[in-house]
Image 1 (cartoon, each protein chain N blue to C red):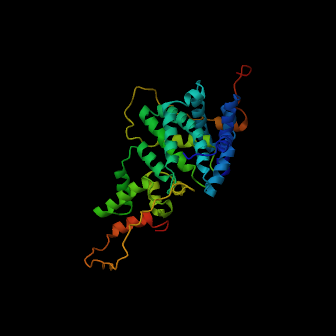
Image 2: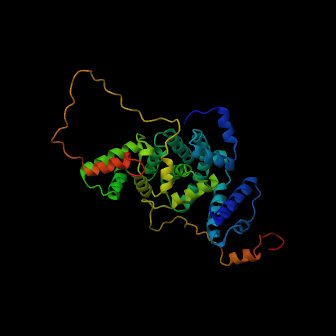
Image 3: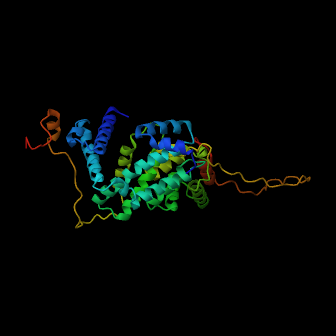
Length: 147
Length: 215
């Protein structure tokens, strides 16, 4: 990466995610060379999420360690593409998680379809009727007093 | 972004902030913030987040092999930013991560643009190689080429277009130095009368890679 003024680099590093996204949108639109610095900082925040989501979700989907690492690389490149856009983007953690899920769930040529002895992929879904219970306020968190 | 997407993002972000602060609420309190049809997806993402949080400290997790490889990809792509933006680096990184050989990309482009002859395919391979190695101008790439590349890599065409924007003040293409020529009275040689007409497929390929957005 190009060299930037260390004070400016530190200032960018200290921005929160929303501020950093705002600066990204500005610098990309103006073709400002500091875009690279902003992108670097956004990506550093995003790759931590990509790594965790790809690993957890990849293991749950039965991907091998190598496939998970390839999914991480793919997701990192796709995050860079996405952050090049002029349009405002979601918070980097949300964006990274979304891209990581897509990269793990794409077709993997080496993915085995035969039954395995490993744990089944968890199917996470809402309990039937929970929607209505949430709407009507009937669903409440458990605590020692009411359960 | 639609209101539903906005609500989804806010709910996810709220959950993330609460988790960071150690003040997370029951999961249904976040699900309640989004429209019914998005609860399934939010539930999945929150489950991922809760799984990802785990007991280990973030700093230790940040040093994993996967994290290092991800940072290496970002570093390599940004480091290669130039006359066609970050497109060369991202194409190369995605291709490698997906185990796709350059020949497969070229074959796909050849099918898209109906390039069947040997010369045309060779021109495609040559130009694709030049694109991936940052030797082409992003501003001269045609929209239909970028659309075709987006389809090959299954990404949004707008992202490929944005990634191809040349870097400001970044490295530019080096011109070929002019060859010195004496000031003698040498007359220019006439064009050979037997020169073969240019291959239309090669011409098409050259237009795709060098003809500008509307070519």
